[in-house]
Image (cartoon, rainbow, N blue to C red; front, side, top):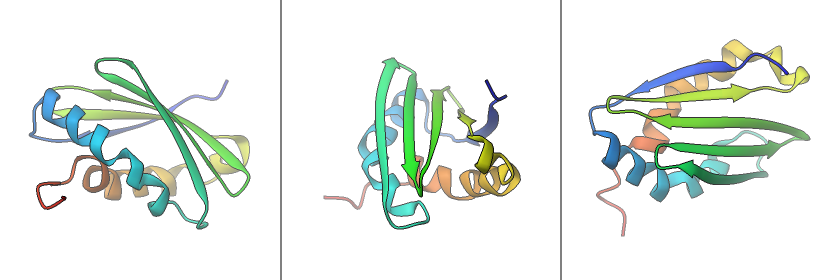
Length: 109
């Protein structure tokens, strides 16, 4: 098994609000993945741990999100082909992940 790529997404929401926002926004994730067609399957293993399988362009990435009081730790297992792009993927998750998963959803209906 490949070593996970770890990305920390700091926040000041508190654990409960971070979980609520992740739950309410996870459905938006496929629209932010390059390639145009992605599927995301997610489930909560416990109160503070979500697992995901993201499939796009013939590749599948497994991820866990561990929600903590002041950060969300994202652990990615990248398949061999994508492991060549670990730096770029980690950078993209860091840049967009907090906005997508934790961003202010007060304007949503």
